[in-house]
Structures are given as structure tokens and as C-alpha cells.
Image (cartoon, rainbow, N blue to C red; front, top):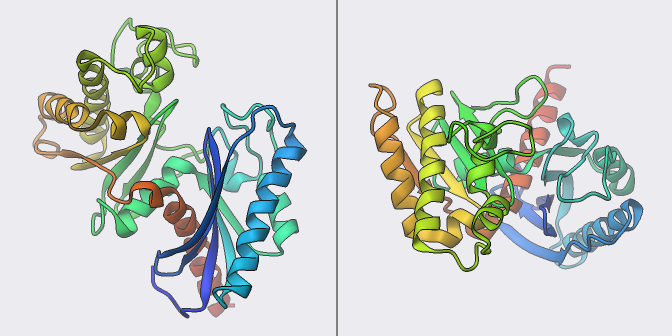
Length: 305
């Protein structure tokens, strides 16, 4: 992904379970401005959308008045479930939005081309562009938080799947006959290692984990990572999110041990699991990557008309 002009920026928007973050990102992936507000879960759908618009409008004004830059598109990473290209969003942790037409509403409000995808898929693009998977054509990125999601890049292409949700690693079975998952199954990774599951199973928040809790969460993630590496011939898994990052080395050491134990095929043996490299820039860089990809595709298509 390369810049065509240094005065072009993407308006990047990240919608997580807890916060709305908007920023300006250059076509080279540099975050030059940002603003953030926590999500007020008491707001109704239109009121919450007004908060999004306020943040986005503020960033567009900053682009024009402070950075003297031109906004060429908007890129969005959003917690799921979502419809392809965010034509409708129903984030599990934002009950005010059910089938909310986010992409269309923002396109009408900003008069910009708007491109969007799941937050974990956006993170995969970010880490492949400028982070821990830079230069890799085949890898998975995971977010381990209140839910567990993922994005998979295979042969240089981000996988979408039939409904746009490819990479949803949170529902890989890691503990047969394990705990009941909200999806209806048992032993899903999300039911064993998400922050919600950990709190329910231990009675403690992820801010005060025991050593055993951190080890077990890492081990469960390592098992799921091994299954995906074995299936898709991957040798790198990049993991972020408050559980993974918060639990630190204990989590990652346990995850690597489980990955080594279960990824024993010739092609998956030696696969690595590593923390995200972009830190808190990752979500905005990922949203921008979605926007850059959309702009590049549009410009390429225009050349052949």
C-alpha cells in the first residue's frame, strides 16, 4: 500500500465494545491525529450515531484546517456481527445497534467513499502492512478480549468467506465437553478464554488474574491457533486484545507451548505466536488499511474503464 500523494488521508474509525476512536491516517499508515470517547451503553441508536458523527466531523475539520490534507475515503473496523462492507452492523456489545445501516449513513454524512470490515480482519491488514506480520503472505491475527475474533491472510489476500466473517476463531473447539458458549456449542475458545468467560469461570476480572488463569487462557489460544495453522498451512499467529496483552509473557509462553504441542505437521511445525506490534495504533491503522484498499481498487478499476 503506497501513497499517491502526501496530502491524502484516510478518515479511520474503530468501533470496539468499549470505545469509539476516530483518526486521520496517511496513505503510508502514519496516524497523524485521533480522538476517542468511551461508548455510553445507555444511548439509543441514533444518539450513539450522533457521537460517531461528531468525532468524524472533528477529524475531517482537523484534516482541512490543521493538517491541510484532503480526506479521500473513510475506513472502518467494527466489532461484529456485521454484514459485508458494514451495510448493517449488530455488534454484540452495542445493543443499541441492531441491523444499523452504518456504511450508508456515514457515506451520506461525510460524502466520502466508505469501506468497512470486522475489527479483527482490519487488525490483520494492519499487522501485515506495518506490524508483526509485515512481509508475510500467510498468517492469522487474533483479538482476545470480551469476545475472540480473527482475520486470516492467505497467499497475500484477506479471507472474507461466504458472509464476510472468515477467521472467526473464537468458535474453534478447544475443550471438548467444555463450558457452554453463547453460540450454543460447548468448549469454544470464546467460552474458555475470553474476558467474559474468565470472569464467569473464576469470579475474578482479567485485571486480577491468577497465574493459572493466565496460563490456561494462553493454552486455549495456542490450541486454537494450532488447529488453524494445521488446516491452512500457516506459520505465524499475531495476537492482540486486552486478555493477551494484559496477561503478557505468561500467556504467550503458554500459547507457544500449546502451539508447539499440537502443530506437528511438516508444514505447521515451528509456527510462532507473537504479540501485535502496533499497540494502540493497530485498530486505526487497520481501519485505514481497509480504506486504502478500497481507494486503490477504485482507482485501478477507473483506469480500465
